[in-house]
Image 1 (spheres, rainbow, N blue to C red):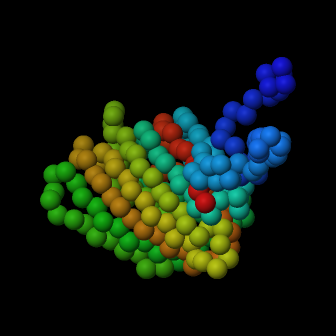
Image 2 (image 1 turned 90 degrees about the vertical axis):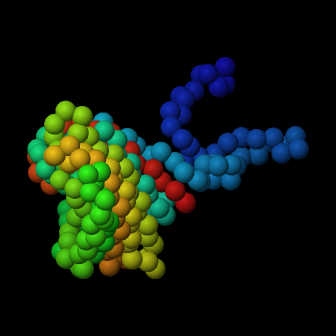
Amino acid sequence: TAITGHTALAESPADTDEFLISDGGTLKRIDASYIGGGGFTKIHSVTADEVANVTFDNTYVTTSYKTYLVTFSGMAPVSDAVELKFEVSGDNGSSVLGAGSNSRVSVQMEDDDSSLTFENSDEGSTAYTVGRSEQGNANYETGGGYIWIFGSQDSNSWITANSSYTSWVNGMQLTWEDAAFGTRTTTNANHFKIYFSSGNIDSGVVTLYGAN
């Protein structure tokens, strides 16, 4: 038929994808953005297996979305006592935006310690450290969380981000950490990179979403 004889769309429609509708008996076309396509869209997902990093390049990080969300699930490092890192690039990975001058503030707690740990880096970091809790690499010591990236496609705004990450540290303590980041640039981002501070990513699923 006219429908089954064509290639199926195997992902959420983009804002500029079009639908054919009947408007009072008159056939018209309409962009997906007007009927829900412009909200929260899954762009791409990567299942890591013994890789140095996971990247989303300029095929996926574009000006189509004002805000990006990256989620992490079942993140397991090969090396012990490592941190989860996130880098933002404006030249498809050749360099890091704000290298050496990015800001970070965070709060952290472990299950065997009722006190909160506060940390900050004033214009002194390159990568965004999403999980600073020295995650372990024993069986089942995985981590999960997310990071929101704002202003990465806005020439009137510096880039900001906030994250939340929960993992098991190398002493089997459960650790929760929330953090915020800032990059003083109006350059559009077109590349995200996720990796551990040492060694490969043993396993994990990293997913990129876009929102307007």
